[in-house]
Image (cartoon, rainbow, N blue to C red; front, top):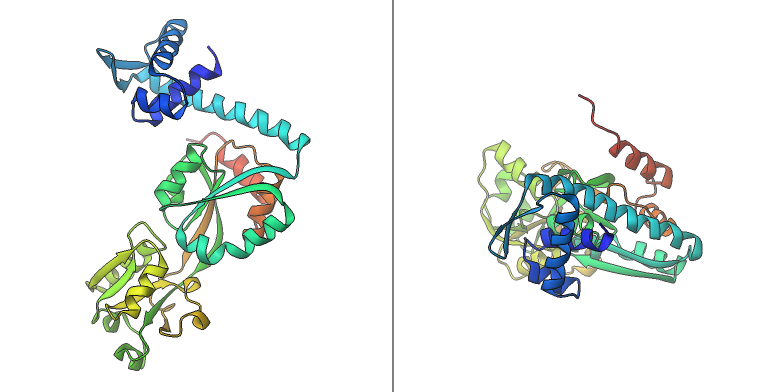
Length: 313
């Protein structure tokens, strides 16, 4: 058994049991992967995959257990290398961040600027996607950390930490009748078509919950994955917008008006997530602290330690 065989095993599962796709992603051939998996099964005396002819159709029950162990071993091997790299090059390396549009566009720019000034030799990668996609990137080792509002706490393989709370606001064109309301209410909002986030993004669940509890069915005319699209279509007069306060900068939005909606929608929490058992480079701790100053290395390490404790019955 060797790490290469475990990488092949893990990649086949990651590619939905498609050996050709696994071979392409690992820059090898399909026969080479098939041969190594067969050797691994023979050495262990366990059938890892179910097959229909030459095609893999499913993981066996023993294969599911071995997959969890293989992934831990691969992570430990990567941590082993990271630990050594920390002593050879403390201020250089790679850091890949996966996040949503709102965070990338509005929350992260000053943090990224400070980080690059502090660590000019660290190559910083920024991946954008929805919360499910970015969580999966961290779980797969394609990103080091991810930042989002929704869904990150749903993944057992991630350690999540709260960064900050934020609220929604309502935006309209300058002459919209909603601006004449003495007090903004859900009833008043529901009289107009609404443009807001897609279900997977930026606290959308808080918007849904507020209307549902009030017994109001809003007219969601359009959904989008980022705030800039929402603002564009509100400016065109297609509806009013509900978006994160952080995504509205009055000086940059002369053709729109913002209304406070803090009393209507519960606050949302932006979280940062790290893969369990991950070895973090020193500059990764610094990036986290730049984004959320209360998340010191000590706080992060404590959360990682608690996440790895066995569950109590």
